[in-house]
Every structure is written in structure tokens, then in C-alpha cells.
Image (tube, rainbow, N blue to C red; front, side, top):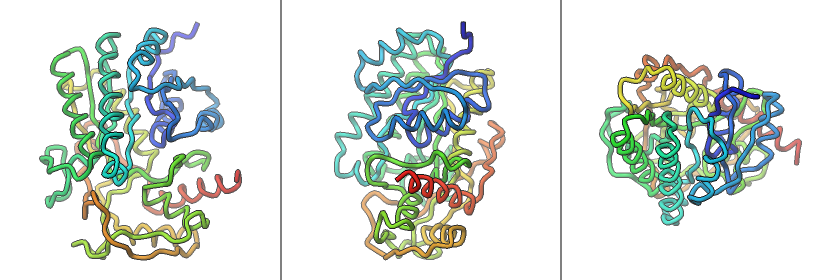
Length: 345
């Protein structure tokens, strides 16, 4: 009989979820189970995870907004040591045009999972948050203590509200140990090139748009705005390799399991501490791939903020987490993954 504890990863077929599953399987002594309804990801992801790790991951293909389906999962899986909750819609511009989809999915799924934590005595919970919670702020770099500004999109508001919900649950249930990880901009792909960022819908994030343009899936990419108050007029973001983000999740999990947390609600920024502009990202990609990108400058997008990058010193000190990959390596791995997908057609 397998006596290993389970870690439940919601949204396990997604971009960060799949990389985190790999990191857990390769570096920690746990089994992993996933809950993902595959609304924006492919079941093939689990075959790729097995190819990389040699281990099978069972996925419950359920909608986490379906309370009954969630309860059935927890009735069946009695050996869960912790939960990492990724499952959420995340396209900023789509959330502006379809706020109901974001409020309904991102909040209800979180409530159902937290309620299950309480009802089934699962005491370790990690919430996938975002630097978008900070809003449009002038004081950079961003620390965990930086006050929120108004959310610039319904997506960002679901993350602000999500953190409040987790914090309130932790206050009401002292046995529940929680962490909110605020990612800056996860990019790149697994070093094997076998798994990376892909969605069933049109890509919304910069790096897959860059690689899609390089192979002709997108005829011409648009740089949204070149008159921001930044060094080259384009938006500045803190890009961090997805495998570094995945590693931070394992460290956060072990931090809770080893009872190192002083509070039962902790917050950590996950970024490199370096701001990179859209044009700098494009030039890095052109350098490592040898491809010239076809891009044009367009108008600013609703919900976008000018510049944001992190102060990650608290994560470095407390979780002993330090990103390994630089911008060129982020672009190299993303390109490797794009070529892998091309090969498969």
C-alpha cells in the first residue's frame, strides 16, 4: 500500500500547475493528484508530465465551482497533506469584457476548496495570487507590505478578494495554515522543451504571443502602447521563469509542513526584482532565436499598468528562494517549447 501523502494541485493541467507538479514529483516525497476541468488546457499535459518524471498523475476532470463534485473528490482522497490552488481564469482583457465569468469561477471555486479544507481537516493551503493585486502604483519595487491600489481589472479584483477570503478563513480556523504567492510574470518553459505555456484559447501573455509570431501562427504582433513613462515607452514587467515559480511552491509547501510559519496567513512576492520592457523582451527573443519578429505599435489596452516589478528579498530570506534563470534562458526555453509544438503539428 502506498503510504505517501498526497498534494492536491487544482488547475494541474495549466501552465504553472503542470510545472509545479513536475517540481513536486522530482524534488519532494509526495504523490500528486490534480483537479482540472480542462476548460483551457489539454489532458495531454499529464502524458508530458509522465514523460518528464516517469510518474503518473491522476486528474479529476471536475469543475471546482460544482460543490458536489468537490465533496466527492475529498470523500475519495483521504490522504491529502496540502493543497496548491491554481485553478482560475487569468486573462486581464477578457475579464474586462466578461466580468461575470471571472467573479463566478475564481471566487466560487476558491470558496469550495477552502470549505473542503475545513471540513476534511486539511491544514496546509497555498493560494495562487498575482502582482496585479497591487494595482497601478508609483512606488517601485513592490514589497509585500505595499498597499493595494484600486484593481485595474476584474481579474485583479478576484485576486485581491481571494487573498481576503483566504485571510478570513485562516483567522476563523486557526488550524488552517495558508500562504498567498504573488507571482509577477511567469514565462518560459520546462528545460526539456516538453511542456510550456499553451492554452486552448488565443494566447494573452507576451511570450507565447512572441513565439507564435515567430512561427507564423500570428502574422503580426502588437505592442500595446509606447508612450508609458518608462525607459522605452513600453510596459515594464518582472518576468520570472515558470520553473523558478514552481520551485517556490515546493519551498512554500515545505515551509508550512515543517511548521516554520509564524502566522497562519503569509504573503510572498515571486519575481526576479528586475523590470524588463516589452521591447527588451522582444530583443532578447530575437537574439536567442535568430528570428526577426514582425511587430507593430498599437494603442494601450484597458486594464494594463505601466510598470511593476518586485522586491523579492522577503521570499529569498524566508523561503530561501532565489530565481535561477535569466531573461535569455526564459526566451530560449519558450522557443524550444514552441518548436516542440510545431514538430507535433
